[in-house]
Image 1 (cartoon, chains in turn green, purple):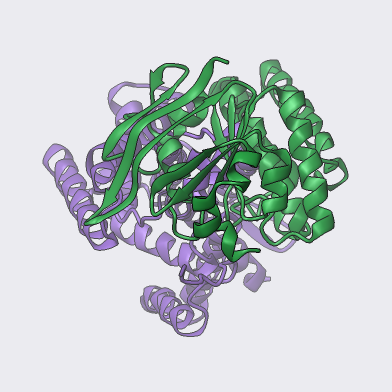
Image 2 (cartoon, chains in turn yellow, blue):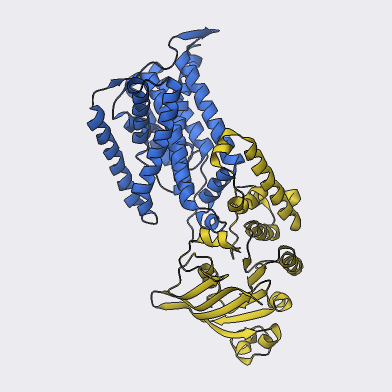
Length: 255
Length: 291
């Protein structure tokens, strides 16, 4: 499998605290990868490093062989990494469909001048965006809510809208930060199906942070366990489940 | 009837304030800063139009277009040179810089044009007409129409185009917006360009209305528009419009029924009242501190 994203020796230090240290991993095209670990292990920090929100203090991040170390979050998104947030960060005042259109922004070009002058290319551009946005919404069954204000959606739907918005940026790699947080078991089951579906439909790799072990073990092919900013274990769900170190550090407390 | 007439005059002046206030509010909403040099940028726009008409001999419409373009460019340059290097720094640094920029512009125009007032050419039809018992000057009417059209185009732009959506997204959550592939820097520049461009329209209207411009006209115009923006709830575009109209009407009624000496006092009194009673303004949201 060709590696899509590769990190080597990745680390970041805040003052004296090494939040992430020597983080090496590789995610192949089309892979569904789980990132787990106790609270404060550095999972979200890794997402922030991968998306350029934090700049690494050591190591390298390569996407398709291109270094992301010096790129801005905007550039990284345009290069193909999209994410959702642990605490939902939708544009709450905007309608559901407009949220998705913001994601479509960089891939749909039409000039500023034509939009001001109302030229046909403006209508064509907007129409295309509208179509694409509705297609994405329909994947999540959100079509009927297209014109609803994002903050008025029920919680589970807001989480799905965040995924739709991230997909709108046409990513190669989708980072999901605790997508099942706050969901009930039915919603979580639905979410598992959705994740499996988008992976097939959009042909992308997914990196998932999640506390819900059933979800992680159920759908991820490979799992990386993080503890105190370093990799504790790495392997298939079965390997992880039977790894005594992991059980001691993390799963043990759950059983 | 006189009362209605004063209301109309007030709305007309107010719509000019509204155009300026929109500049403050857009820059605040998107760049999270108050551009206290905005008034001076508008002063500059009056001079641009003046030079276009008097020195270059352009027809008024071309001179106005030139002024809008140059003023938008001036706004963007100010942002790039003065404010962008301070991004991420405290608001006090930005505030002091803005005051510095405002004095710089005032003095540059003072050096070029001297402090004596320059007569602004009559670019709008003079005179007035009667409608029922109302007595309305053409300038009043044209001001209202131009401002209305400008705000209409702006609202269309903000709500119906992808750049407008990008602006709204950045204003709500710049961090999330850049992770959706939006270039926050160019969006901020665009806000400065649009705010200054609209201000240029107001600057030309100001020149046509008062016929005399000097390098200091931006100060009072800017601060009144700022009050309008605060009254409406800074960051809110409809708020800036309503705020501008309200300030204009308050001013006009004070001038005709109390005394023209009091008009500024009333406007500043309004600012103090809002800050005491509803600091978030009419359309403003309660700002919750992020934990």
